[in-house]
Length: 515
Image (cartoon, rainbow, N blue to C red; front, side, top):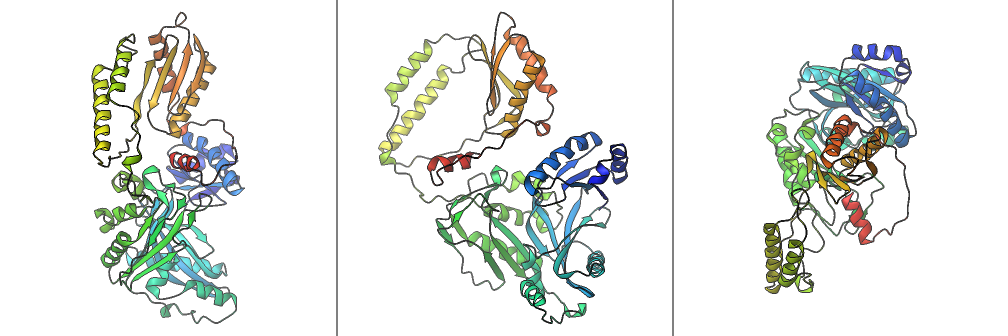
């Protein structure tokens, strides 16, 4: 890929010129590690200036090394890698390609081989380049050379080399009937592998691998730690399924490590056959007690664009909403609710009393958010719940999703307080907006404001009505919010705290789920 490194970045006079030589958009990446940590796409020079320091700081925290580099970003790209094996002074060989284009947060989740809808001549050129590179470097052992393929231009670019056996190596093993791990060990022991002839390495059929993660795709793939209460591995009789799994029933999934719990590899004589085998296996494997991405994987595999192999590296990101199962993928240990032990907190009498209290509260067009209609609806809900419990009918529990408001709400919260709501959902970007607004109010010394209290998705402003009217303050704060820019670009001062918790405490678990 066209790129340049940290030493070039330090020559600020040449930086913009070099960026224009590469051509925007550009990727800002960490040199010392992968997994998408710190990686950012920038579309112009101003965005680049903001992103460089951010990526350097993230790289320093994650890898202990703040070195970064820039490279050209291909909009319609496929991620193709060549599996090689080097013999030092002798010529290296390759074990064909893997298509790793299906990623989330720049991390692979589905890999396959052969790569669909890429001309064999292009794949052969990639393989020749990979073998030539490994041979020239006198590389020894298994390794992977990765390329970015520009679908529109039908050109490929060298991306990087991984000097190790990768997670997705079973895809190659499946179609070439080889054991790369065994080969690596034998080579290290000085044993002869009889692999110096490329013509002796053949492949057949099609293989696909899915990474099964303990994570929640509906919460931006947040890891889902917890105990696996039940694990049922299907006995489908499918000879062309391989399962590499690292957990068992009763095991705890920790949030300290990568949440991948298994790799499922499916082989078929055709691509469609290997996809169908994979879908069947995913539907039959049962994991209870934690969230997994199982339903998400099935949705991707059944998507028409994936079936037709018209995807690129942005496919999942651009279609995420259609792949996420709105219903929780988690299967709880207890699958019923014992209504006999539920103590009803309110009855009809309580609700009527509550209604009388509200009706006597002074109302203004700006201050009262409840109406008689609202209270009647609340009364009906409580009454219905009580009757349901009496009849022994299991109540239905629904999750009500939150929202981020298109424009903030400015509400009176007493004579001297204004409540600003950015949404009704826990969201860090909203919190950053609230924090930055509080700072902007202080920096601009907004007239009449005594104090601000930013919360997760809202902020309380204490002001003096004699100095500034509600609507005037509202207009001034609206302008300040607009001046903050996109929430994704906001930076705030932060610190990292470590504190002890009770590991299996229910409130600790609740905290992990919420955040």
